[in-house]
Amino acid sequence: MTCRRLTDFAQKNKLPMLVIHAGRQTKTWDEGSVRQMRLKRSAVSFSLDEELAYDPLFQRHTNKVLKALMEFQPDVIHITGLNDVSIVGAYLAWKLQLPLLGSWHTNVHEFAAQRLRRMMRFLPKGLTNSISGFAEKKILDGTVLYYKMPKVVLAPNQELIDLLGKGTHRKALFMGRGVDADNFSPSKRTVNDGVFRIGFVGRLRAEKNVRMFVDLEEELLKKGKTNFKFLIVGEGNEREYLQRNLKNAEFTGFLSGEQLAEAYANMDVFVFASETDAFGNVAQEAAASGVVPIVSDKGGPKFLVKNGESGFVAAGLDDYRDRVIELMDDRHKLETMRQNARASAESKSWDAIFESVYEAYNETIRLEEEKKRSLEKNTAEAA
Image (cartoon, rainbow, N blue to C red; front, side, top):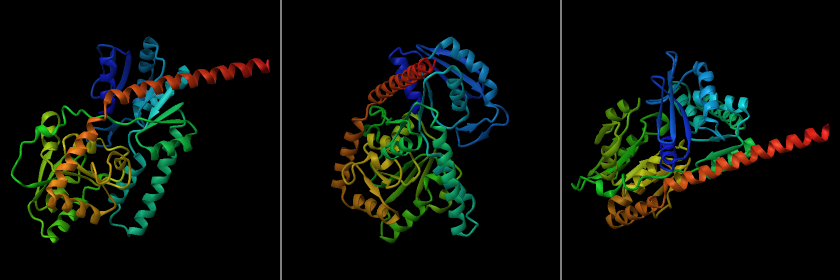
């Protein structure tokens, strides 16, 4: 979503951009100043998520991408993570001696550890935690090593900026996320039945900690709360478990556009218990919809809310339960926090985010030129 917004920004501002991405068929087309180049993944690709895959044979497209780059003559190359397309981009940046910038979008190490824990639930908990913890550390080490290739790295929160800056010895800068406050708006609400709706939007996967909803429902029922409903938007292999164990929930499946905006607006609170998200776009979209986000104290989403004003940061199940009940019982506070959440989201402009990205492109180019001048000077002195 962020990458699509970036290309929209380039197109709107008539900035030349070549976008290389993967898809079901190979195709090249122009959209104003933006040239899109989609390259087909092979039959041996394997799924990482509903809309994400990895092709171990994607490097077969290298010469095609090289030709496109030679024609386009880029000033800088931007890779978006440890994936099949970006690996080709990083290699060609090295081959062509072009400035390279990398942005961090996903906490791959934490996602992998969460999925390992889920897969190994049949083992003793101590052994499972030991194996997943070891895997998480090694994957993080490998990912940080990968991000040593760019001259500049962009990250969505201060914890990751510090981690990447220290681990790569590269310039690490902030790249946040904007939100479309016209599309996501309280005005899209269509329900007024008095039912308190606890919402979630995202992948129904282990790394999103969605099984916590079952525990949360049990805790609310123990406290005598009954006039509530979970509104779950998204798909994933945890959906079956949730449908089987949640007593009062509505599952919409994957939504987009106006349907998604309406679903957000129909929520009262947005519970996002993921401990692995680098940013948490969905929490910001919920806030723009006038929904109070309650997020984990682990990961990037905690940087998106002012605790107790525009949302809550929860330390565990008891905290989630208490904050939900607090807003159930105090509708005046709920309304005040809804307004604060909306105001906070309205201040997050996509244009400002991408203007800072272009500043980072210029910084990447400057650092590369500085390096070349230094090499030329050392060569001349040696001669």
